[in-house]
Image (cartoon, rainbow, N blue to C red):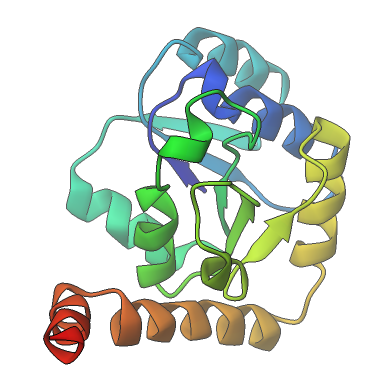
Amino acid sequence: LYAGSLHKEYGILRLAEAFMQLSVQAELHIYGAGNAAEALRALAKGDARIRLFGVRDNAEVVRAERSATLLVNPRPSDGAFTPYSFPSKNMEYMASGTPVLTARLPGMPAEYGEHAFVLDDETPAGMAEALKRILALPPQTLLEKGEGAQTFVRMHKTGAAQAARILNFF
């Protein structure tokens, strides 16, 4: 599942192209709107496993994130803006308890990578290989990865946890 801005520069078309290379029984659910929507519709016509849901209520998206097998943030690491932005999508994804696949983004602290599957080859072929490898893992392994990420976010990244860090600093 991917939920967010459907902009070409965020890698969503690469994700769809990667998914189309897979011969697994799975679906790619995509939520959002943006400049890549038309191209995604064309790709979905060629592969019925790609399902576009458009913009939906946040509660519905969160429910979908929690029930997905894997959440993917295909944002490329080489974007000019990437070193200066924190991918809040990764924190949202991790909080869901569903495992996450993301590139090693320069604006993302290294500790997040310990709780996600990290994409080292961001090409469609590299993404396809990562998806294939992850989707072949036992369900229990995926569950543990997602739960570990969720625990990490709850223990260290909530407002209360951050406030405690500031109080401890003082």
